[in-house]
Image (cartoon, rainbow, N blue to C red; front, side):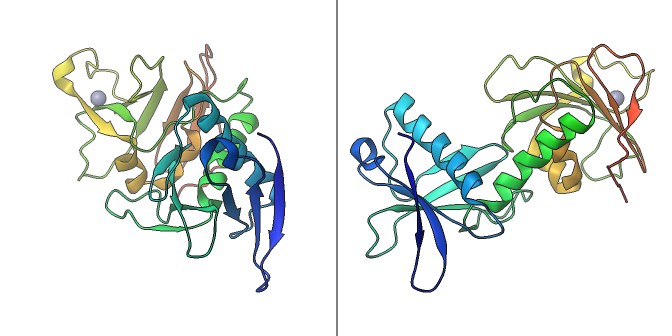
Length: 236
Ligand SMILES: [Zn+2]
């Protein structure tokens, strides 16, 4: 399945629709080009969905959802339309809102920003792009309610599917992070709700370290003793 068509509705709205997915899924899938999404980007999303259906042999039905990178997509069927249309989380950084909106512009943009952060910091290639519901292990001194001065993100190999592989420490060399009583587990979205700018760094490969201090982001490439300031990052 790798055929796509570009359709233009009478009102001018364009969408990319699969051509042939119905033979295995029962329905084609369509992504509207809203929020600046290009036909190429839409095809990538639809190809991902087609590959998922082909490999899992699960048909996608109206109302069902699918993880796409950080965010979640939902499939809906409009009256009089044989195809499934794609929606995305309207606020992918919120822990409380589960409203969906047409298209996939935000989900696509997050994936792009993560790949760009890897590239501009000279890292080899992105690792797993975690979903917002995946967990990080976090130092208990980083209270969800108190202000954070320094956050130190270290990526290790994730041992379980719901683990992102990220450990978030307080940056204190005297705090024992090997003591499990000093650690907690947290869904990544709780971190992004506090500071959405963290999300673009979360696809960095294993053994990367990212330090967020008051004003800067410092990236340590795997194996590097010294980090470098990510000059593109602007923290308030
Ligand atoms: Zn700590």
